[in-house]
Length: 447
Image (cartoon, rainbow, N blue to C red):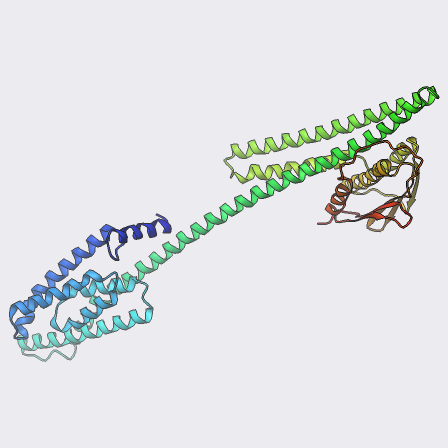
């Protein structure tokens, strides 16, 4: 039974009128002990009445009233011990004394109070035992045996009536507190496990959200750039189809190449996603077959998402493809100038792909919003980082608008990519009326 269940049982018992007893058997036990104690004290009250020269009924009633006090031992154990000490001179209440000391030692009463009452009971029992034994020994044998026999027997009897119940009560109380602490610790561990499961589910949901965002960025970058170039070439093809057939044929070939490249990149992306789903399914099945906690399959989703992202970064384009990217933009009629500073070197796959996507999306934005503008693409290889900048001048008013739609997520996607690697991203209009996109990526991904 848990601690909460015990409290509920106790509350229900109190509601039914069980007073301070938490369970019915506890009440039955205390009533039985009180009846036995009252019977004992009542019988001993007869001898007390003879000794004190009192009527026998008075001694019996006194013993019965004193013995019934044991009924409240769980609520007021110190009161039971005090009554037992008070009736010790009358040589009654032995059961009450034993049970009262045990209950007092096992209760939550402070140790100093337990020690004081135990000492009082020990001293009272010692004095009464010493006096009665001395009187009996002298009356029976006529010898003065108080030098060693009476004190030794009195000490042993007083210790025997006091020490065992106190020690046993201390043991039971310590064991009870230990069990309560273990139950509380088990409850706290159960709560912690529940919190950990909730956090694992939140992390899995976060991983799924991150993966969906990454897929959206990849789809946007691939589709937006390739399709934008295809639209531009299709518009040029339409304009020169009748006037310049050779140029129309060239533009048609470029449109076909762009479409094939877009389909290739989409197939690669879908292949990586399917591979990630297979990894997640395999890890989930392994966890279920091993009877692992429910949090493991959720964590497998995050691991599969990370694996898919890493695979996509390794298989995707890199900085070496930026020159080809610039050439494709030039084929559409854009004036693009590429400048590279520093010694080119190999970077981490995610850095390579992010740099490529930033330049790609910036060129796509120029194609959408600043048709005919001159574009400057700068790459700078520095110590520990790589910087890129795409800047365009004002749009040529005479250039034909290709009518490409804009979802408004290009700059947001670039910023997310760069900041995810611990880099810096800045974008904004220039004084000359153009637009500038700048990004700095560290050589390695920040922890």
